[in-house]
Amino acid sequence: MKHITPIIMVATLFFTGCNHDEEWSKMIVGEWHGVSWVAEGKPAIEDASTVTMLFSKDSVYNLFIGNGMENGDYYVNNDSLFLIPEKSEDVKMKIISLSDAKLELQVFRGELENIEFKR
Image (cartoon, rainbow, N blue to C red):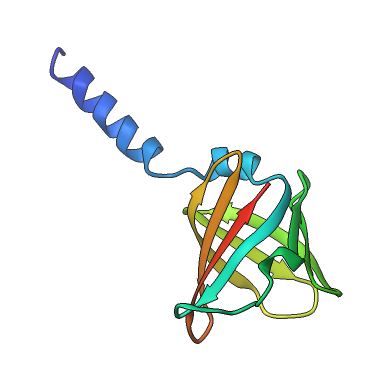
């Protein structure tokens, strides 16, 4: 029995420690402002500060880029952010990091894009 307890503890940490979905689903809620949006090392959006994303507790998002707007649903699964827009194709973004102050995403849509937001 002495050896089983450490094995169970390690297994529990492995399975719960590798997936941030529940924690990140709560942390992502709120308003995020663009810092940078880079594709293959070059700015994909010249002024990333014109980008704002709002995530609600009800799993609805609003994306504002300049004068444009996109709405839809979202969810976090397997350390990725899934956007389900009302009028375009779904988008899967890998969550590189998420803290109270910073959100970093990575997406591949023909080229690798890295997107950074701040609160």
